[in-house]
Image 1 (cartoon, rainbow, N blue to C red):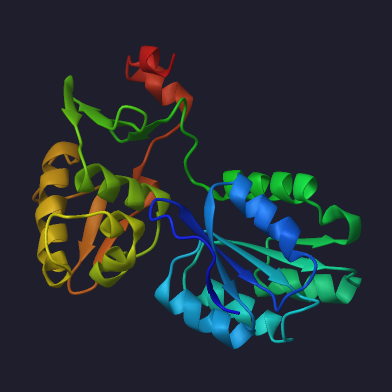
Image 2 (image 1 turned 30 degrees about the horizontal axis):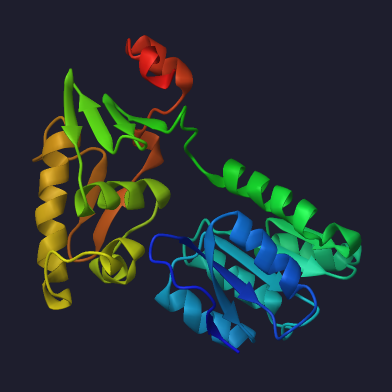
Length: 262
């Protein structure tokens, strides 16, 4: 059965491709402990359709139970400019199969006794950590000369502090969670940040995001008219590029703000 097994709008989304194997209990435990909302597809074609409608940070595939076009599915995910963590689960895998999976874009192949909640959760967490371009120190990220404090939902720049509420902060966090790819209005309307928004009707979503993007740029950009952190692609959407960002802990010290990380 395909669909969403949980429905909490603030959770990150994970996709599990499986037609009812015994591994699903382990996967459910792992995904729950990592704070993901779990979507399930019973077949590769169903999974293909779901990745068109949702952005997934984690995709787990039971290669023993799913139909066999796993290699094509992984290649399609990577061709779509996704930086999702892809994990293949198998009872056993030969060297040739593992090599082909890695060539198709899989991050890891987990087999046999390794497929248990304790090990699977730790391996997935390690991949998610290494896959992220950000290394926040105590929930703080640096964007050029801007300090984003996730815990306080606050932005600091040039000695001034800005409290970002509601959709404005959620919008910034969504871009930080999804760097180096184009985010369209359509995706934002389908995203968790819109699920809890009461600022306008869905048909007015495009205008709402434009207005909030303008407000956000006035806070985080040195020159809002010539944005450097979140750039626009006319008629397509917006993109946050990690090459423009500074996020190492030593940058906090150079900026004279190391105390905020204590």
